[in-house]
Length: 69
Length: 185
Image (cartoon, rainbow over all chains, first blue to last red):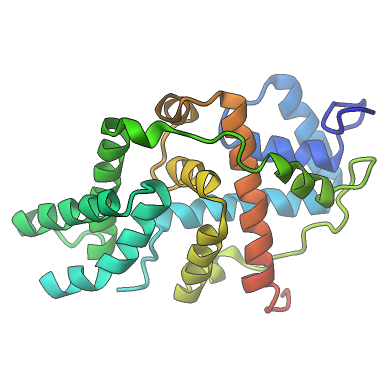
């Protein structure tokens, strides 16, 4: 394997992490979405990563905090 | 209102500087935003907090500034080439995470705390300059990737990689400095 991001038959955490991030900036292809979904179904770590990325986005949109009044 | 706005000024300048590298231009953008609020105080209806209202106006001023200043376009896409190590370090050779992300508990709890945003701000300030800039344009100014690429004359894949790296670094920084101290529920 020369390029570690190159997609093998089974989506890896490495690929899933990248797709979670890119999915926030562009529309993923059908194949990418499917691979990501399949991986998230079986991987707690990447599912948490996905949730953490959503939290980061929510936090940035509220920035600076609403509570610093 | 004047006094409240003055209290916000330092933080707003720090934010503007994450995107406008030139300090004088960043201060100008903040000044413009504050003047805009003070000139038409009746426009502030109180539906949101004053801070949110000013921030909204500042975002437009920053976007204007980014669009009009050509010298801001010099963009070093080489930044963080070595960052692939950052990504490599997270995964094993067969693509598994070295240390799977741990639970951050209830997300709403974090978002309700002022200190959380202070920690996030410190993490943003630690990002490499160009990476921070792209990330702030995307997540704070909420610009689409195409527009960011146009403004900075970079390719979409450049932008995606920079955004991905920014998110990985921020995740790690928050994990260490905020969530790490708190035991998962």
